[in-house]
Length: 244
Image (tube, rainbow, N blue to C red; front, side):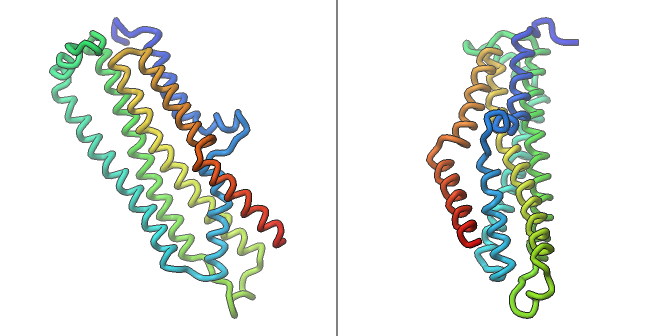
């Protein structure tokens, strides 16, 4: 049973938030554009290819360690946030009375207040599991990178180019998928902020959800960083084609 003051705008706000979050990658397919993570696939492939030809360097270890620590940090921080959210449940009635007393907060029932709170908690929980899963994928990727052969000297005859390329492609895929999962969790923080505006009003939540989505798309397509990455990838592609 839904609370008596649960309305169509509330349903639209909650549904739009989840749809924008989960369907975010599909937006780029609809507009015929690639995300920054997708563009960087070729860069990761080239990086792994250099490892197989030149060997591993301390810088490679630093890069991988930094990625792992970043994902682990977000996972730990999200777990702390979750602990804080679930501790609020103990005193939900008191918090409901305090918040509904504020002028900019809608006077809603405890049932609807609980639904709004539950949505925010669900978003953070999904983000936490995304970070944990991304960390597991990174562990797999590190194992694959560590096992990549260095085809120099006598070992060059042990691996056919096609076989070596298959190893690089598989490793690149696992590394890219881990970062996709990590990015999904990061986006959850943006939409958790949008979920907070449900306490203000459904219209406010809808507006913030759209602002968050437009901001994320803008950062992927129109920022100086995105343009530089696209130019970098294009130049590498031209250089590789020229060498071929």
